[in-house]
Amino acid sequence: MVTYYKIGDMICASAHGDLPYEKTEKPAAGTKLTWLFTGEPGSRRASFLVNHPAELFAEKEDVSWLNINKLNTSVHDGQIEELPAELTGQIAAGTLRAVNASHPKFKEILSYEPKEGKKRVHVLAIGDVGSMLLTGLHLLGGDVISSIGICDISDKVTARWEFEENQIAYPWDYDAMPEVDVVDQDHLFDCDVFVFVASKGIPPVGSGVKDVRMYQFENNSKIIGHYAKMAREKNFKGLFCAVSDPVDPLAKTAFLESNKNEAGEYDWMGLLPEQVQGFGLGVMNARAAYYAKRDPRFKQFLTEGRSFGPHGQDLVIADSIENYNDELSKELTNLTVTANLHMRAIGYKPFVAPAFSSGAISILMTLRKQWHCGSVFLGGVYMGVKNRYTEHGLETEALALPDALYERIVFAAENLAKIV
Image 1: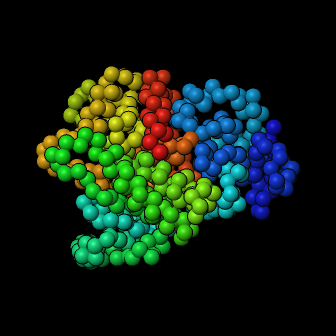
Image 2 (image 1 turned 90 degrees about the horizontal axis):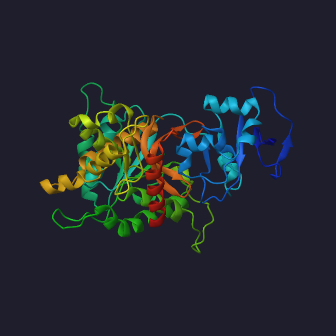
């Protein structure tokens, strides 16, 4: 049974009939509705775009939401059958937003409207990856970025890149690319998009470190935690992009650290889970495509494939969704995961492709509200999936996943949950 509520100017619907808001009659046909659910703020997104009726009644959020087969066999079948046409119609049209009524910032979330127009982007740390990412945003982002602020511990570094970037221009069309300027720490969150590319350091080529990403986690988690707390203090409303390695645990660290009060207790008054996204899956997807172009055994990936999971050992590459081959998919996954080691064996740090494929290109696709590869909050972990931001909330792609593929995704999620 569905109960309707009037909250301000909004009409909401819920399976909960005991929420502390004014109840109202069933609205007229065509009324725009928002769905209200309840759940622990640290285990659920604060809001999202509903793309399957089973999501309305789910007691928990997890990777089963990526699997149409699991959603279709939900235990909530009876409730789904009773849904009014207004709700099923909005789900089909891709316009139904769900909001967590248990979140302490509920009313703020409910009334939130995304900012239209071009975005101000700030990039923290202009090292190897940061400088390439900056260049990509500058060259390609004129349609969605108004300007780019850069920040680094070295004034010489920011002076260099402000000077370099602003001398890249089309003749006679000097405003086609967003202007780059230097921003200080005090104004780091005066922006719409914050891009974290800071890192304490990458082991040198030949160091013998096998899992470079996890080697970086201990130090980088402290750094991102500091800036996440700063975002909380500044009441940052924009998108917090984690690009440094290991992307997925760092995204979760940023979310958790921003939600602690001065006593170190979780009060969930910081960044919303969907405000943080990890950008590491883009290059893994691109690396899989690289090998698929060069080996006809993998060619189906180019038209039928998908990538899931972390930017690391538990990555999941599927050669195809409809014609999934577990053996070929695992072989392609292994090639993709070890591609960075191949580059290091040549004698170079593998940072250019990640800076563009995971960084600049994926962030720009995000701002354009296009489907892209990124790690989003899903039941307590940041999981790499195909997703997009819409005016009705964050949407994750749901597919009919073969059992063998789904088991790999579940395994990856379980391992991510063990890290942080």
